[in-house]
Image 1 (cartoon, rainbow, N blue to C red):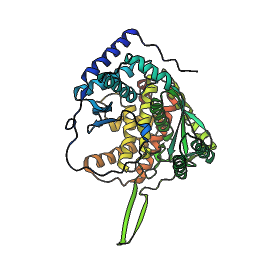
Image 2: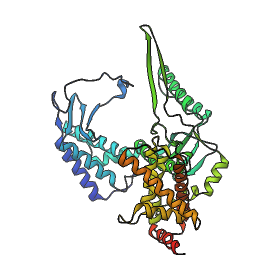
Image 3: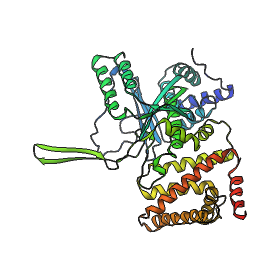
Image 4: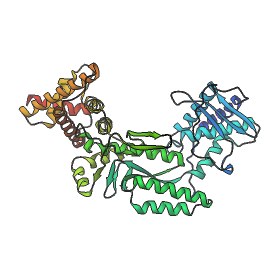
Length: 452
């Protein structure tokens, strides 16, 4: 069944169509010497992939600044190179952004795709091509391209025994038969023999690295680019939630990636040692070996008892409470400490998460306030609470030594105690999420316990 593109108000359609026409008047014909290309050294990079000529129509050229923002876009159409730059390029990007901000289009259309389509429409109109209004062209494109996509995202540093859901995605294993199925699909593709063989070979190379790992599986109804964007957003959020239960948050020396493969910060070392003019040795490997976190069915059941199911419910909830929003923000910050190689970075993220959740104003003293509230949330009356509060102050002092004086962090026992206390607090905050509508109410309850 074909996808039915949501109806957009006629005033918005007219506004966007008028904007597209205006963009077509800002297109320039680009002659040699125009544009932002600078003379000088040009590294001879190897081109990784060359398309067949039949796959290339109206090749495009994009220039970005140091912040990654597009500053110039051009294309060759009917033998002429035309494009936008400067303020015209900014107007192109802003128009595409406004179109994608419409609630009817935001879930199904990528801003990158809309920008490309809008520019192509304006450029072809500039060279004299008769075209329907832009929004009609966009609607036709979406009607053809929007489908239910299954997006599989391999996860670094995680293996699971059985599939389970977190938020809008499922996390499951990548078994051998999954790669076999990909090879079967590739072998049946409409391509020549060499290309099929290359596709299968590429899959098998990935299989050597990924088989046995986990994958995020997202099902998204959108055009392909938007489907990938949403799948990666959902994956990042769900994996961050899972990561707060990983070994990387519990120990100073432990690292748990638990992130989309390729986005994790694994540091690899590659060297070529020349032995003489005719021979050399090549070596490669990770400078920070990290064992995968294995979540079997027994551990998964235990995670459910310490709040994983609660966090799943918060992720899928449409109307979250203020408490749940603030908690989720703190969880996402806290989860980053699991994958930090540097001790200082790990400590900074853990403390920052506690501060962001527990401080109610900038005037509150950080060490005393946060330490006491952590202690009254997880500690028993008396010396146990005092030890927790004291430990937080020591951890904060270690953080200050690093940030302000550049000294290394070497008090591992204090750090172990701190990470354990921080984890216990985050779990407690998750389990308390059904009792409070705001963090302020939770904090007031913690402060009240001081006077019991």
